[in-house]
Length: 181
Image 1: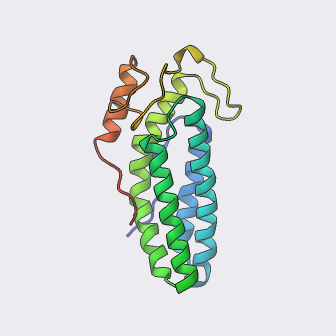
Image 2: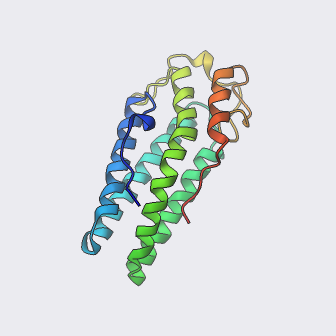
């Protein structure tokens, strides 16, 4: 299977998020291209980056009233758990094939996750004027009155009045993201 490559289709017009996503794509490519000797170090680099990447997005959601239990954050937790299980199998049992299979699944999952859940988050962050670098919300009146539950789109509670936000979320949740197994 061909590896994932960065494209304009993955860009979300939020520079810090886009940079982080470009780094993820490059690290995933390094895993997919690694020979057996280089695979585990490349995998470790991807996992370390992904922990920071998801933590950053989760903090942004918390700062802008996405509930900690929303499906976006939950998907982050599930992916990190699966990555950890793959790491353990490779380290303890030498099952490098598990890492290769997971990398292939991540290459399928990541664009779907980016174009749905991350796109809805980026739209929300722009709407409230959130600066990802400083953590400042420039338009606090635009913050939802209640926590955003669910996926942050049409299936969610909170931010009731922004129809474009709801349409973007609904479009993104029409295709439920696959989780690498």
